[in-house]
Length: 320
Ligand SMILES: Nc1ncnc2c1ncn2[C@@H]1O[C@H](COP(=O)(O)OP(=O)(O)O)[C@@H](O)[C@H]1O
Ligand SMILES: O=P(O)(O)OC[C@H]1O[C@](O)(COP(=O)(O)O)[C@@H](O)[C@@H]1O
Ligand SMILES: [Mg+2]
Image 1: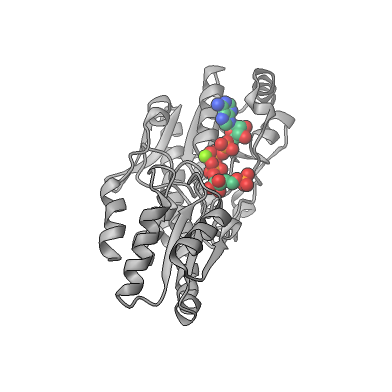
Image 2: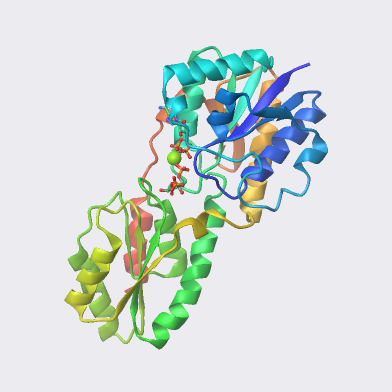
């Protein structure tokens, strides 16, 4: 009988639970024993795991966060830490580890595979920063949360004829800001990928005011290289407008996953188990052209996220 472990790692994302549920239930359906490993790589190092039955993953499909808990593990960044993790895998006789996480967790899984461990990776991060897949589990929910916030901010922003800077997550990848900018009708977006100066944003705000716009929304990804308070001050000084800052922060990482994230999570879990059952390992599961497939982990991780410049330019055209 095949024995596998499943863990969640890095920043949590809505839909991770749905992925855990899928891995456990599809695994059991194929005659596997499935172990839940707690606190990501930390639990793998410390041997914090237990067998999960079908019922153990009941009532989690609709919940954000992760029932397995998650961690950023400094110890796993070291060779000694990873060797300890391998000892746990050997002690419990695990044939493979399913890692649900983002680019860092995938890099960790690749290191594990170099030590002879069979791994299977499922993309769980709100950042959407994995180039090989069209979407990651949690991204859709996070952007919808941002859109909901923007809708509310617009009401008050418009009543007071203000400009609001909305800071969203994304240290290296501006996808949350970009998609929220398009779908939320922002005047401008500021991203880590584009070197845009504040002057052009101020011009945009002033032009909008001259055309009778009552409010303006500027979306700034946390990775844009300027402090948000500083940005607010500059915009206020240069435009003479009343400017407020809303930092959405961890609000974006919580909440019930959307249909899209539940479906992606479930399909990724299904594919991960199907491939393991077929004797395939060291794959990253991802969505390409509407199909959920397994890709070589090393190659998938090396694929850089292509920045959609056209979409970026659309924000400006749409908000003129
Ligand atoms: N290059 C690496 N080698 C080994 N482990 C890594 C590496 N990069 C990240 N990890 C492990 O994966 C964990 C999660 O990565 P992190 O970047 O924090 O989140 P995410 O997986 O969501 O991108 C890290 O805390 C670390 O334990
Ligand atoms: O939870 P922390 O450690 O404050 O990290 C915040 C970071 O985590 C994220 O929410 C998700 O990133 P990861 O998927 O790489 O963990 C980023 O958008 C944000 O910059
Ligand atoms: Mg990451």
